[in-house]
Image 1 (cartoon, helix red, strand yellow):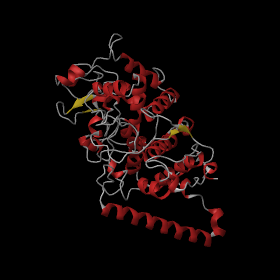
Image 2 (image 1 turned 180 degrees about the vertical axis):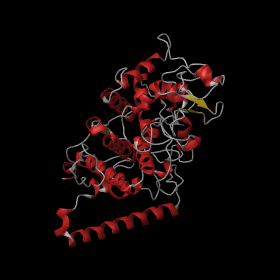
Image 3 (image 1 turned 60 degrees about the vertical axis):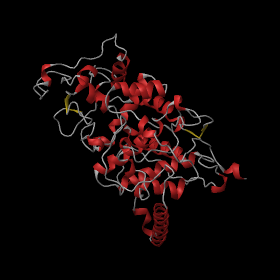
Image 4 (image 1 turned 90 degrees about the vertical axis):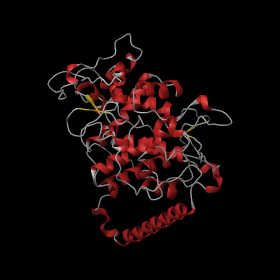
Length: 423
């Protein structure tokens, strides 16, 4: 799909089925894993108590890999909500302490992943999971026979456009176990968005993009979303981006361009693509404007034209872009359809001889997609190289709020406490 196809490396590939076809063995496996994890935590807790005198000389496990100027949120225990008070498929209450606890748990899991490739996949995969949950929204499909979908805690695990998500959400995946053990009193849909928010905060420069104040909860889960994968945007070009983000979800080009900036996290190796959007696997763990720098300032040319897995490359490492990335600035629709190669810049850095003969044209002011090109330049923050990320962060925060609440009603801001509901 358009919103990332990251490389695997976490989990065991078992599917966590959310289409009403779950079987007994998967449920037994999940319950067994939860019991084992609880026993491990109990054993660790006893061990820590016996070594209390040494506690002051050791830093908290979640801080081992913490970088300078990236303060971790204080640990808060989530408010426990009785399971019987939760309506089926919805959150009974979502407090500030629960939100903060999810953030800390995501950071703990992230810090326990030792290699950059797997960690970038984990981080990008969580954001992709939340995005694929809302990108299937189509208000025109609302009837007694079909659902408009949107964020509902469900994805079609068997659809090829969701390849890789089964290594993020599965019976033995850390994220699934975390939810089952600690946060099952809230809906999956709310949990996925809160987890993605945690990733975005932690990976943004100086933790500058904190989405807590705009987070709303109350999304309702469904157990079946057959056909949702067919609604996801394909990586063929901006006509797909336009159909999904603008026509169905009601967003503007500025919103769509900002959301595409999430490609800065993770990799693109599923569905036949190869590499990542920004530099190295280490770079792919930082949520910043580098994605736009790469589109606008690097030299790109197409490979595998006419094939479903067509990419754009620079000849530099494993860097890649998809048609849906390049078309935010360059008018390549006719070139792709006619399989006519071009280079985004026809200088010596364009290493493919045939592509160098023709420069990919940028959208003119009269083009209907000129707004997309302007938005990319806005995310860059100007024409000169710099490290200012706030134009991107501000635009992303607004677009993410719209996207994660699309089609939703009766959503609520975080509660200061859930205790009053049960007194």
